[in-house]
Length: 151
Image (cartoon, rainbow, N blue to C red; front, side, top):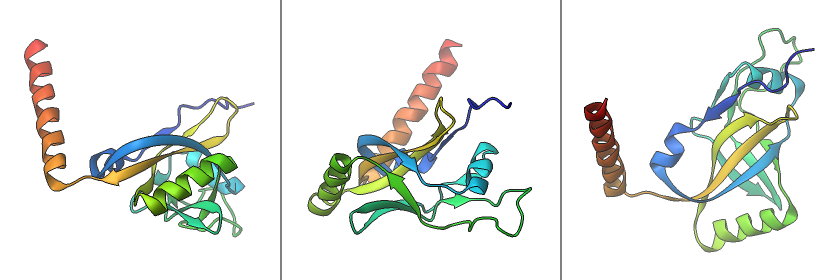
């Protein structure tokens, strides 16, 4: 039997650059068999993906999961909407925050937990302004220079 605990941890690198993340939630995600196999092969892209409510359910949209290599004609759609699995309390809180406070729900990373299930980490965030992004880049460069001097 294959090891379920593969080191799959794919991050949305743009999320923390473009958004100030206020709260982070871990959600289950409804997947087809070929989708989980593609995730285990790290064939996933977060480009232009976002989360939105349809009714009282939270869905991740435009999340690109490539087709499974050894799949047949019943392979999954690449950019279909996928339902996120959260508790009712978390869903109500997220819905309220996204409507009233004008915050955005962004997928941050996807990983495989110890049971072998795919989990999506989502963040409640506010868009950064241009000067905030520049400050982040300056501090990152300064930290890199300090590390270079110390080594």
